[in-house]
Image (cartoon, rainbow, N blue to C red; front, side, top):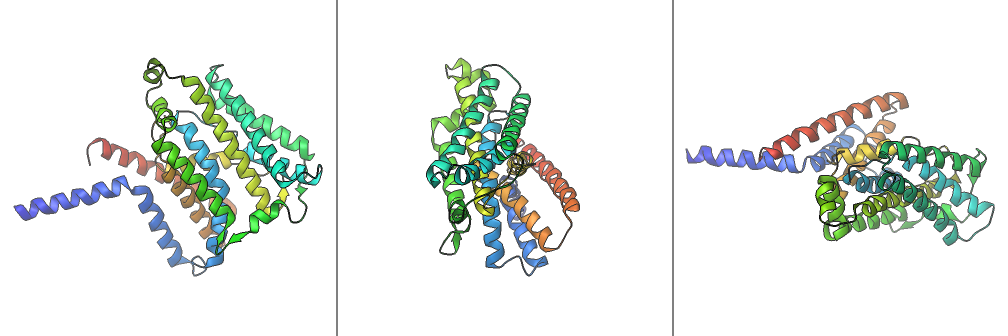
Length: 326
């Protein structure tokens, strides 16, 4: 009898571990599968490529996470990224600005657009879907206006250097992404701002009754999302040395999917910066392995969609198990 009790406790403990860490288990399992099915996956050049490609996606997903934690959504991030890409290239090419000013300009623009979205949602009581959709259209229009609908090639030895620079074996873009991850993790776990953002998504009425200015916090998360999107656009321009208004299509959906794969609840109040990053990496590995296996792009979208559905169902299942005390 004692042996059976011990086995039951061990089984329950293992099940509880899997339920709490399913996102990490998913990433590790996928990584192992990629190594097995493609000999080209686990080599330095491919891993560096994954890191560079994921840097902007990670930053956008982290900004999106804070919006989702409040129970909101930001559909404008892809278009704001495209605008950031165009603006940095335009500033370097047409106005011959220094690197610092050329990078600061799109970040300030992303901040302004994010603040505008936040004001519409927090103060004008507009639905997040509608407000961010409108801002998506505005940002996309501005990107096409500034670039005249054409790619803007950046001068040599400017922003493109950032995209190719390495610190030892590690790309500079990866170091930048890690710094942003640490920043968001600290804000989420150890600051009043992070705790209040989560509390707003859990019970906005209770937070308001506690005397906390909810509208300011809701506005601020959209401002953060706008900054993150602009930075992602700058990163995209640095990787290709081109600013173009057509990048960013679908980036908002990838960011939302990454957050959901990481266990974030679209109703707000639940999510993790680290797990959102894991969600980005899961999507990146899926895309990378399918490219290595020469899977055409359209079937890739179908496969990704099915995996996202499976991930959401897994998160729903594990959430139910957690609520039952497993």
